[in-house]
Image 1 (spheres, rainbow, N blue to C red):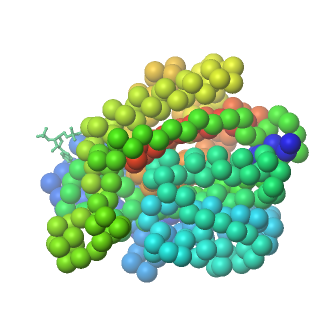
Image 2 (tube, rainbow, N blue to C red):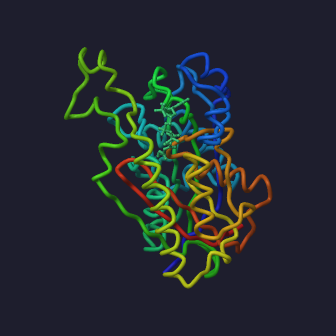
Length: 329
Ligand code: UT7
């Protein structure tokens, strides 16, 4: 059986920046509160003409270019998103067409902030099964389209962006995918969701007037679940594969709140120098946070061939997942 490896990382963030000071002119908030409670300083916002498939396409092109691979070599494209261009066709279809990935099939995967890790799990399994050679996993979200910029409890958190991993068969047995643990717990649905626009509450004048097409969150509930699950799953996957926290070269977590990340790392006993945090510049880009963080770690020379890497995420659903890899390049 082949082993799956991550062979390239591509990213895109739109150029326009929304700072905490900008937000303090829109809602009653301030830079000091946002930085202290979340660690976020600024986030990128897509201009009106840009949709999720446009950002996903840029991230996809970047990943393929990093590896020197043509779109015709792709066998599947998985787009992880909660902000598709439209409900159907899938964003994967739109990206596959614009990219010119003529031989690829694909689909969208909806798991909110855990979406990218779930997509990565699926791609790893497809490569390990021997049925696919090269798969592009894209996490892309235009959160600014579903954020209520009159709600200070959510509008400070989110930003727009896209990232992609190329997953392919590894030549050696050492590098690549080791294992994953994923969980869902639908009892968390009331605490983080977007109520309208689906079959339960289709779009109407009433739903628009009641501001039901925006992200609603009970922040403290989600916070407590995130800290507990990120720790529990991380500890469990390390134990399952016979590793200690001290073996982890880099923890690359979903970037929702700096306090969630540091609490997780502290409980695991992973020192700050082995944890990637870049939410100060991007905020929570939902499915894009992990590839954006990996791209920054690569650029800073913090990812080396053979390093043990732990990815971890929690999101709406609830969804939660961890994934363990040896970096392959
Ligand atoms: O990736 C998806 C998963 N989502 C998450 O992981 C988010 C998890 N939750 C969080 O990150 C945090 O709960 C928040 C950052 C959303 C909120 O932080 P918190 O420390 O839990 O604050 P809180 O909701 O308990 O609010 C504390 C106070 C409240 O005022 P009172 O009732 O104590 O007078 C809020 O009204 O802070 C107030 N507040 C704000 N103040 C200034 C809430 N938002 C703001 C704001 N600026 N933007």
